[in-house]
Length: 109
Image 1 (cartoon, one colour):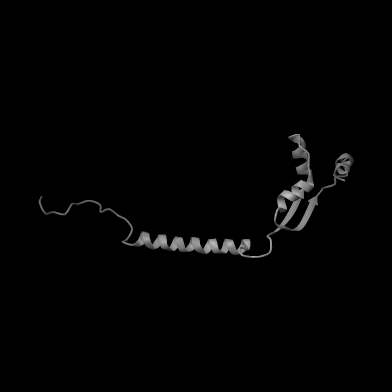
Image 2 (tube, rainbow, N blue to C red):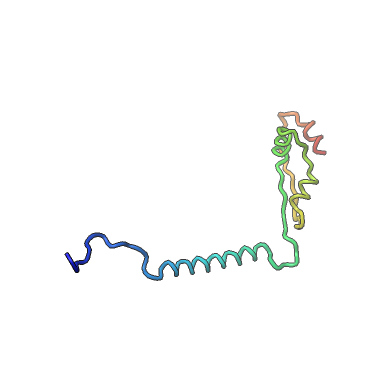
């Protein structure tokens, strides 16, 4: 009938201005996170970023052997450090007295 308000569920949605307020809050949070990332990266710093290299030698060796490649630890260090300052480089080798590893260990020297 004419002039009656339609019945049924009313369309629900955010309150007026709620989406804009949420977008503004998210933009502010993104700006804060970007500033924090820049701070942690040392943006604006005159010193190069620092890097540490920790190598599991057995895994690297056997993975390289499996694909027919050779390990070049000098090239690995150069690739990892690039324009960063190397703080520490450590290669981990596990010695197993039950297995003859003399060939593997002599290859590393």
